[in-house]
Image (tube, one colour):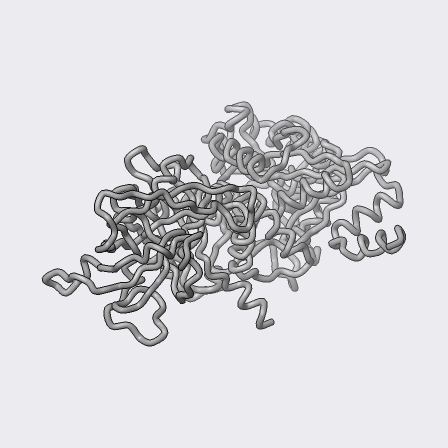
Length: 567
């Protein structure tokens, strides 16, 4: 393939943001410099939607040899905490990205304050004494102009005096605000004299303490922070598209020449089925004890996915698959589950675990005898090697793998039928023993000694293969089976019910009498495994020496592949 054709195909595969970046580079904008930023608010833990933004912000910088800074938008001390700052940095590192520098909006509080004073002096801002409710009522509607504040035309000197008194802490919260003086009849509602500063003095800032009593609003701080840092491409989600003219308006007032202007580009946010992305709702779930913290494996937070056993590679691959567009939509969570299956299929060692054990006794196997059977760690990855698993007269199998009176196409264990025990012998069921309630408590079978791998009858054909563990050599374990947190596909769109009513009451099932093979004693927290015939699991950090706890990452059933085949 010639080089020009290869370049042409590469251009066709660009998303629209990359196309914008390449065009800017071709035109020599910003002297060929590419700089992005990831600007999270430190008021909660990052979720999977933020992972999409992280992959874009850092990915653009990586692809075009630019830089990406991490900047915390810490303009609201009421909701912010150092805990969130630390968690955000941990999540970004876990996803495999590194920032060039760490900045905070609070780094620019003095510059923003000075700019606000300048706006007052130039007649572009005024202090309003109306309440938030009064200001909202005067905003008008998209088809009706708003009403001007009675304080809109007060003298410059009086505005400066009041703003300085606001910062000095002389006025109570909510008593006054600083508003930009733009156009109360603008068709863009964001131009109708937006608030740019409000008083917050009862909550010390996590970095600046009680230095500041007034704090800039997001729309005022965001664009200027981009400008102060030299950001060339300010990437954000579609809801900020209508904010972009205001973003540019402030920067044009701030900057002193026409050589540089950050370019804001919007892309679609990530919405997943059976999931909510609202920070407020996620915080409510945590505070109300409906989940076990921000890292609960049912949560769509990055730390929740990490604890559940998702890998950064799977999440990044998922983000690549869904791409970036200018249209909001909802992505089937099955695609995310497909991505982790694909990743773990070639990484996770295969081990034996029995979640609902019932005893299987091989009546003709010598008592006291133990054989170490060879088990391949991962058939998809020959270099992964193998390990051994103990085989003995008394084993555990899954209760659902036995049926006393089975239908014709039941190819598991039933009297008179042969099955193979994974990595071991073919056995033939001879019967079972029940307790007083009719519950099966023991199953009996005979093993065929010559059916082990490499022996004369090893190639005998049987239709069923079951996993198992030795009674004497297995370990007790707790297994947590996670399901979707909500029972409806799009809980955010259901306006008739409170989102609490849409929670799945069966989103967590805890199994406490499971047995796993002894190999898992070596496992470290968050190690991945495939429990044969069951699904992918990882070791939970809550595990202790005498209690192994495993989280189900995802089942083996791939609903996305089946759906994809039908499309």
